[in-house]
Amino acid sequence: MGRKGAVVAGHICLDIIPRIPGGNVQARLTPGTLIEIGPALLSTGGLVSNTGCSLHTLGIDTRLMGKVGDDPFGRIILDLIRAQDAALTQNMIVVPGEVSSYTIVLSPPDADRSFLHCPGANHTFGADDLDCATLRDARLFHFGYPPVMERMYLDDGAELETMFRCAREAGVITSLDMVMPDPQGPSGRVDWRSILQRTLPHVDIFLPSLDELLVLLRREMPVSPQAADALLSEMAAQMLEWGAGIVVLKLGARGLYLRIGERGIAALPDAGWRERELWAPCFVPEPLVGTTGAGDATIAGFLAGVLRGQSVEAALTSAVAVGACNVEAADALSGVRSWDATQARVAAGWARQAVTVGVPGWAWDAGHALWIGPHDAFLRKRV
Image (cartoon, rainbow, N blue to C red):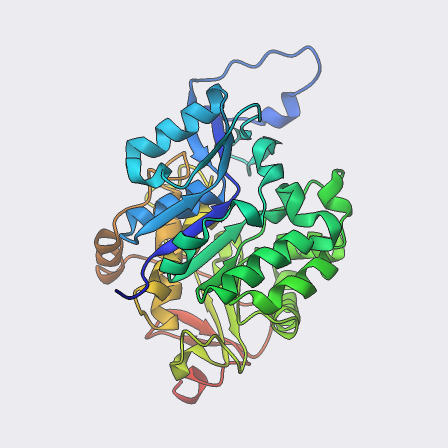
């Protein structure tokens, strides 16, 4: 029997999402203040849950590999996963005496999210926690978020490199996602340039956000969309030079950027997966409820497209479609629909957000509803 499905490993937590009324709540968070809020929504969070369970919803045979403690939060995490499918907990690790990770998600309706996060058992996850037999049966290995997993960034990322080297030797497509570090914490002081240089040669698909890369590598954030647009090709080219096969940069409400070099990845030999530069605008959510887990769901849509044999254009479209479904719910999972339902929304003429690229050299491809970059050697010949 051939390889199939995905192993999704790394960070998992319990998201505690209080319902916050409108108004500038953050400005009112002063010492001694009481702010009345609504009920709290409990949901699994982190990449293992957000991307892994979304892949499961999209019809991909998925195995989850995360670590929790034997405390109440750990039991809630496992119960929430079992409610979706009991089989998803088979490769989860429960460690007596460790604290399970949790995040308090502050997501007001009129402002971006803020997070209060306890990494917990994620800090002790390492290469020795991978189930190698399961990995050898899979087609794809997806991992994240090393900036909130201590063993992944200690010793200049030696453990992270070891894990991806082992996954590559197991013959799977390897995929890596990142997360924003705490600038004042240990992960904010790490040399991420060195860590990525030693890890990316073993990574087929690298999927951070542009903001994450800028903070990890330059300790800065873009000052405007135009400034960010000008950095896309530069940052992606650097990641390709360091060894990644495909670079996908999440841009929040502005969509998803992709850059593929001459090498691409061996598992995708089609010419359409070589020398590409594309930008997919988001679909318009109906309505926008919350953005928790939107990037993870977007990645799930892209990886599902890869595993289902879609073209790069179709996989990008699937990615932003799943991401738009995600933001129609407050939590990270309940907005995601089945693969067929998602594709049906796209085929029915689902409207896209209007995005204008702020740098020259880009061309709009109306047929695929994508922007084509100046480094694309495939589609530009046809437009």
